[in-house]
Length: 244
Image 1 (cartoon, rainbow, N blue to C red):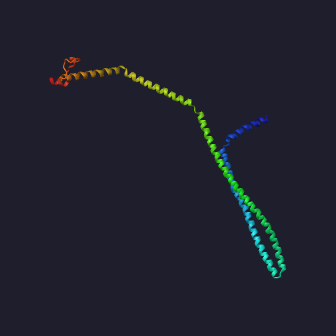
Image 2 (tube, one colour):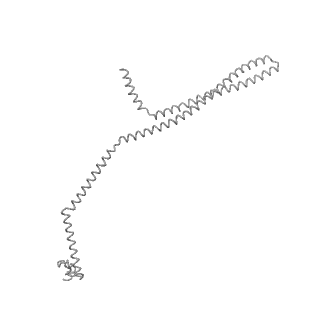
Image 3 (cartoon, rainbow, N blue to C red):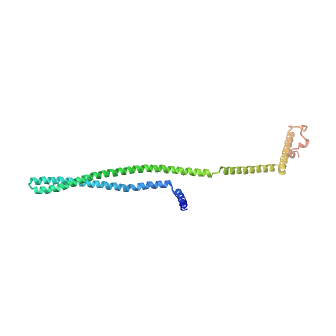
């Protein structure tokens, strides 16, 4: 039972952690951590190199002291002061022993400085390599996110929904157009429209009669012209007034 509970909690919290982990943020944090180590590393290298310089100065100082004591020993011997020369020799021997030890320490310090610089340079190269790799992974992660968003949009987009909308609008427009045509046909076939047509035709007949009357008065046609009735030979209003 306890094992099942542990598996349950591990699955729940494991899923939460997996969803909360953002590769981009994690990689950026790794790069920041690597950069934060550079100042401390430079400080350590500087301390190693400072130790080398300090030992190097000690070596130079001891070499000068040995040379100076050697000169004093020779001067004391020339003066016949063997006792003083013996004291100088004892001090010089101690300085030579210290010089030998200092030279050994200097060699160790030089190797330590070289190793520290080499380690720092290798770390910088590795950091640049990791940084370039991180940027590549971040770009790949961004592309993956974009592809996921596009895929999600394509999945949620239903062609049938929009197609149905277009079909509904097409039906409504066709129906509206049909109603408009029916209204126009109904309007053109109504009684008022027919009366207007009759009145228009009557006015056309009257105009034709007036035209024939003018032609008779002008002698262009005779009363016996076929298709012309005597009733149509009505004088124009102006001509009738002139005859009166």
